[in-house]
Image (cartoon, rainbow, N blue to C red; front, side, top):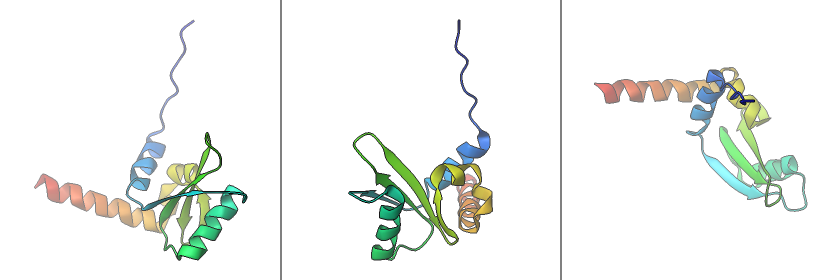
Amino acid sequence: MARRRKRKSRRRLEGRRILECVPQYSIESGTDKPVTAARNFIHSENIAPPALLLVKRNEHTTDRYFWAEKGLFGAQYVEENHFLFPSLRALLNEDEDEVVSLSK
């Protein structure tokens, strides 16, 4: 029996493309939970939003978080709902302006 491929969401792919433009920070959680490690890193380094944090939980698992003006969110949620975040909307507009200027 042939296995069907999972359909890729256009909205999520667009969100992933937008998140690639955001600064990324890779950290290890150590003894803390991944969210706590991400929050501690944000406050210790005074990171301004928007930012993407990749928190390594163990050698196999990495959790992704998005630091926005409104707080810390899971990256998958942000990919699917990128239009709810004003800082990402601004990045999207900048990308469209670059594409228009490059095509001229």
